[in-house]
Amino acid sequence: MDKPKYSIADNTSITTARFDMVNSSEGGGDYTLPDYYPQIRKIVSYTADALPDTKFISGNNLEYGGTLAFNVFYIGEDGALVCVPYAFEYSSSQVLPAEVRGTAEIAIDAKAEDIQCRVLAPRKLSLKAKIKTRISANDKQECKLQMIGSDGETVSPSERAAIQHLNKVIPVMTSGRCTITGKVTGEIKEKQGAKPVSCSATMNITEVKSRRDCIMVRGEACVKCIVFTPDGYYAPARARFPFEETITAEGASDGDMCRAWGRAASVSVSEGDDGILKAEVEYDLDAEWCRKGEKTVVEDAYAAGRISHTERADINSHSLLCCTTSSLSLNGNGKRTTKPDANEYLIDMRCEASIDHAEQKDAHMVFTGACKIKAFIVSNGEIICEDMTLPIKYEAAAESPQADGRIILFSNVCCTELNGRLEGDTINANVELCISVCAKRENKLSPVSKITLEQSNEELDNVAQIKVFYGTKDERLWDVSKKYLAPINKIEAANSISRNDSVEGKAIIIPIGIG
Image 1 (cartoon, rainbow, N blue to C red):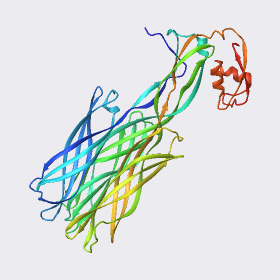
Image 2: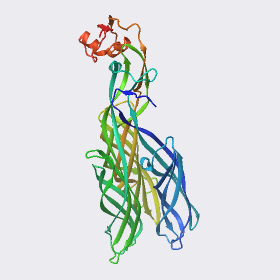
Image 3: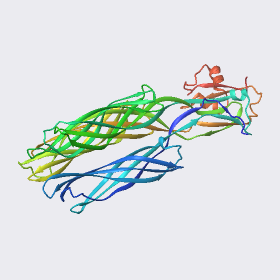
Image 4: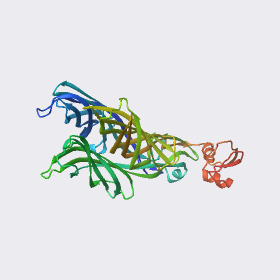
């Protein structure tokens, strides 16, 4: 039977990263268009979204998968603009560096990159994309100081009292993630007879609040269609459908910092008997709650009057910097690479936005990234695509003081509104973004986890001594007391000095062996 071990400090549970890694896989394949689609004359643009749906874990092996949804814009043989949606299932696996108890503990965020579209035949496409998946999980590590004798025996109360320990208060955090699926419907106000060519949606989060064991999320599905009007023009049509969801979040409390983000899993548009376009959006919402706090760990320890040996535990503790959801407006312009023409107009604009860097400046977090925009221009029966990029800079209050640890960033950005106009050889763009960010700081610690008492120090046994020590620069009273294995409270009393006072140039009386 294991012998009991005495703990000086209360057990302290600290949130650490069990792992945080990125896995890349590929998805897609060949797709043959149905006969009711016209043959492909020219590809205009293509997009892809990775929608993670499933995850299964066995031991430390994770299997996950989802849907890779493509949208391809092309000009058909009849000169009409056509949008073809198609989805492939994808799956992948990853060996995790640490075992977890269940899939609820693992967070998965997927993004489609390096999208490729090739025309194999007038009705056949090759669609491929790389799926970049971030897989992460938190852990809780016990941080306590154990005290035993050299043979593993329980030490006496007097020996426990002789342990001197220097405590340190560190910032810590607790957090959790949750998800829900939902559906919302509404009408798209457009001229009667307008025919939808394509339809997409993004999720704009307008309010996120934490409650006991749940997160309340309000927002709107921002629907955007390209329609062909009765007078022969292509035009954008927009609508916003409000929603409200309450997501179960075990462990959350009132007032926790929280964020939410979402994606439209599918969008369908139909024309009603009254000629009004009706849209249905199915969506996934994710939310995260974070709570800051403080914990006490033992930074250093020794035994007064006995030789002792200490062991340390390396910990990568997390502290909260920022967790918020907000909106951001951007505007700017870019020069065209093609020559302007009098008989042209802007048909559509799309963007892909991301935040990839976080930096703490005093009491603020500065998040930076880029918004990559594609502008589609109808010119003499053809569609021209122009590219431009707007920088993203977003600031939010930071929750903990600046430190040296690495910043861990989680971010989700989507475009909720994008408008533009042509002015000669310049394209002007106005963008509305929904930004959801969580920044944590990784603090590397090595607190004392165990102290073993060896034999008594023979020089100190039952001997009353007084020594005088002259303090030097950068020395603390703790350093003096540890050097002479003397209780720090007795040195404080003998010198009328506090352990936080400087000892530089002072004659410090050190009582040894005095009860």
